[in-house]
Image 1 (cartoon, rainbow, N blue to C red):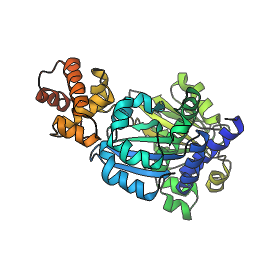
Image 2: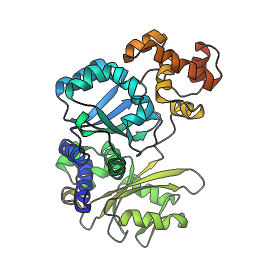
Image 3: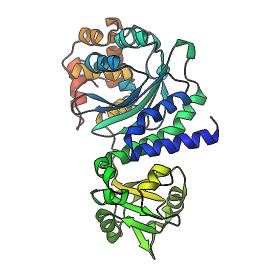
Amino acid sequence: MEALALSRLIESIYDCAIDPALWPSTLEEIAAALNSIAGTLNVMDFATGAERTLVHVGITDHYQALYRECYQGCDVFAHSLLLCPVDQPATSEELAAEEELLQSRIYREWAVPQGFRYVLLTALIKNQARLAFIGVTRGEKGGPYDAEEQARMALLAPHVRRAITIADLIDHKTLERDSLAATLDALTTAVLVLGADGRLVHSNAAGRAALAREDLLLSRVGIVEPWDRTAWPVFRAMIAAAAGGTVTLARRGGGNAVVSALPLCGERRRSTAPRAARVALFVQDNPCGPHAIELLGRAYSLTGAELRVLLGLADDATPADIAKRYGIAPSTVRTHLKSLFAKTGAKRQKDLVKLLLAIPPVVAKPL
């Protein structure tokens, strides 16, 4: 992908933070850049087990409704994706064994009729409440996603993550009638708007309070800097970067916070921003904590398929129920169950469930 085209695509992604109506066209651009016929931005709610689609392209409303009503509970990729690091793209071959994928209900009944075969998924946000991810897919003729395409998605994923994180904070109804500065003033999240030289142009009440505490960011002669001098170079590079960035900063006295930068150089963003503004900084206490299910999976080196079986047992499903839910052979579930016993040292299915429930906070529901 040419550098100019990549730069323009990243610009489009950040414009979506200000105007969410741009997501469908931007997702189409992302799918096209990865030689894909469809794409989706989804969020899984761990509290309810439900999945919500923020935006989708290349998937008809009929099939999207079918997925939501019939197939989201038997997605063979979800548990493996939970084990993947944020911003690290994974192919369908890496997320599920081919035999298990091809015999699954979701593949045979939902993917095949639409001409879908290969998938590239990337976790964007993982915390105690939810898993957000972006996915693209294509047919048999397109072949599996290669290393170059994975690298291309790895370049785009952090920008998508920052855009949806920042968009979560912004009241877009307010933004439609007021300037960006007025909208930011209504946020409880600390926001600082800086000029090209790092000089403070605007801050909301929470941002002013954050500067007054001097435990994370300082304002010296109007220039905003981290109190931790060792973080100055990476902080300065982030606010100077045309594509923004995210940095975790240490707090004086302990703890840390995540600072996300939204560049205000795009036409849509510049038109709503204060004069001389170049970048908006959103400061949050670290929102990404490890999820208990992921911790358990990593502790025992479980695969996504083994996690599916374990969570199914915790949901009072029998091995036969689990096989029926995902449309796979009972022998496949028995193989995963045998592996779970070997890896965890448990002797009975009840012991496996106790192991899962002993690690709070966790929801014993299939994703």
